[in-house]
Length: 466
Ligand code: FAD
Image 1 (cartoon, protein in one colour):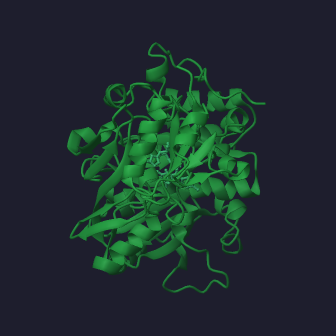
Image 2 (cartoon, helix red, strand yellow; image 1 turned 180 degrees about the horizontal axis):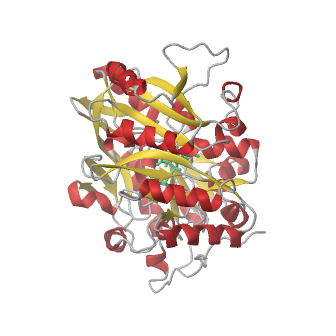
């Protein structure tokens, strides 16, 4: 199967096609460079052309045409993903969905939208129309799309209350287009949602999304300072365990993260300050302040509704999730990160063990997450990178201790996930993408079913660096 990219491009020339080399290169990249491992391997990757459909009908036409010419198609929301998710490893077509940006219907408790809508615009539409908001969003709320969040993300701001995207009820329905000789349009609910959510667009393109909503609030954002890391961690968890206090964010930053990397916070903390970031619903402030009154070790240093900082910090959620890594990288380019799951009931012990083992080479950044009704921690630990071997060793020690790693230094679904084949996604790919043209190189089970996961997978058709 030899791709005829030129023929595909020519056949699609009546659509909006990007022709400038610099724009094609920019549209072929995401935030893969957070990982020094991926930066070395993927920096040269570029699509042959970029096309921007304006409707589902144009998406179908692009997939049908590229199928006929064996041309790979990698879908792009806004390209804020890590892991090289949106990078066209084998070249071909990048299909950029920025024009699929209509919020179609808003009802009590749910919204129906196209995938290319920015999370912030979706929230604004829901708030304006009905006083509602999306339950959770990636901290890239201002720049990322809802389609990219579902196909590439996992959870974020709101997950301390609502859990992760993959938890039942957090996505209602997805409409999906297949890449076959005659593309089909399918509607998925319930068990079927797992086929395409967090599948990096490897087995179908999401063209319509139905998501649940919650009442919108003007959240009070805060920073709370502690002298002891253990107290900060306990505070965040215990607050999240108070069922009557509604929060949208609770995260923990080990010292000296706040002092070293949060420029606008720095004047208000010491190098030894451990910080907790919070979003609290206004009607829960009384409950929160009562909780705070029982914690003399906690000092509120910033409140968005009573700000006396000369230079405000901006949204507190833009210090959390993967924005923490971004802020650290801007100050110290040798920083990278890990994604860790500290599961119930040993989560606090595990965090302490990893801290004892690695701090300050690895600094703890924890996000409070609800999982199966329990509060746990997602770790997006900051790692001072030295060598790939040392990074692998740090990962191995975490795994041996029982802390699951979602390795952000790998570009495949399996290695960035639970290191196992997702049979539902693989089975659907066989049906929906029989030529294997959708975001090739991202699903090991498709390319090499016998892969052992002993070492990093290297996609054989990865573009060669020039
Ligand atoms: P893209 O990067 O464009 O795409 C992501 C993946 O989805 C790609 O594989 C792409 O091919 C596929 N895709 C996109 N649209 C479709 C579609 N319609 N159909 C099928 N496949 C599609 N992630 C989180 O989960 N939570 C966070 O809090 C978070 N914080 C982040 C902070 C920073 C600073 C950065 C850089 C990243 C963060 N991420 C986070 C990762 C990323 O931003 C999110 O996953 C984001 O929502 C992706 O949206 P996007 O529009 O940029 O998608």
